[in-house]
Image 1 (cartoon, helix red, strand yellow):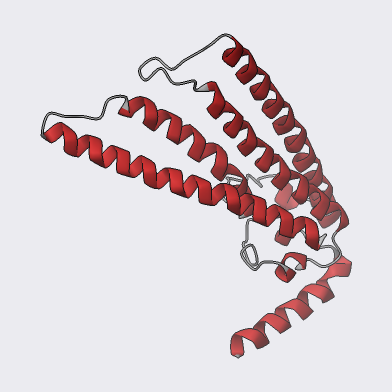
Image 2: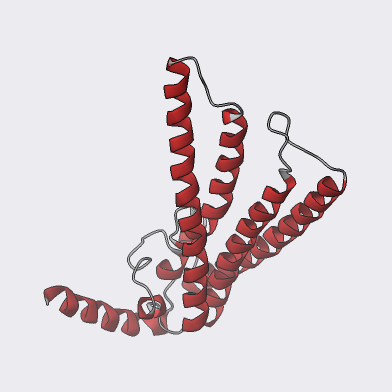
Length: 203
């Protein structure tokens, strides 16, 4: 389990760092375009490039946002469920999300192939933009990986703080499915983990 969580973390962080670099490029492009317009020399195709960069940033950042529980979660009904039911419902949702994203990624790859075969180019800069669709599909696969990890975690974990062994980034996030669902036989383990964290904080 620890190896799966660690692998997921590295993959999601890789996507996040690439998205961060692209975000810097987007900010720089927008700034230079505004500055150039002041002197009557705007950057040609800046809006098109901004659209491409925005799509890549969103696709690559999705997985790490899921890993850190950054997406909106509605618990209007599930918060009333018993712990075991919460776990099973959460695992089902994660499994369904994994399969859905897998299908979407495959569909996007197939569409990119068809557009490349047809010689599709962007309207302004005449760039072969279908290649970017492969990267977006990779971002969807990263998110699918995060969903699959959540599913396996909910079904197999014994220690509610398993992830603390590989990363403390999710520890203590109140909206985390992984940390909210605690079965009765796990309460002692959670108390022990909290005691260890308190000692480390005291040091």
